[in-house]
Image (cartoon, rainbow, N blue to C red; front, side, top):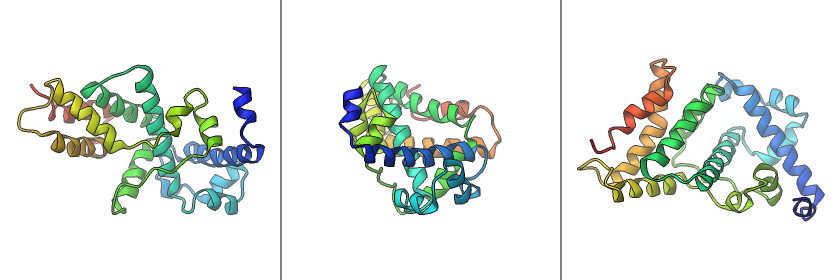
Length: 213
């Protein structure tokens, strides 16, 4: 591990640590708030990094949300590589983590949904430097180098469910992938609007719409 760290230029490691400090400061500040209520000045003060440096890493504040999605999705890929699941079990694993994280950062997923509502398409995941990969995923650098794609993951899970005979009759794999996205974002929003503390229960109720009885 030390040899791998030494192979990365010190300057790149310092840049990566500064970027991650800003990212982690955002997570600490958001809590129950909307991302719009987290001020850039507070982020930079907490991370002890200038606004000029912030914009070198994140051209707009909302890019931190996309960065979060990148890191979060890679973490789920690592978990599924270590403890493989397929079909609806894998899809349930993704939803369960969203539900669990909402206990600590309820405003984060809502902020991501709000941000995506203003986009014309699902944003591309940012590319990570070798230094960022080393710091974020020291034991799983190969997976960290991969470009995570939520659509491809959902497509894989749905095709596995279809192959296993778990997909409800009348629903094609293509339709099921679209519905998986609807559940991923929509069930969370529904739980919020209904002020439900059982976010995973709402996910489960929606997931049953895809499953063969």
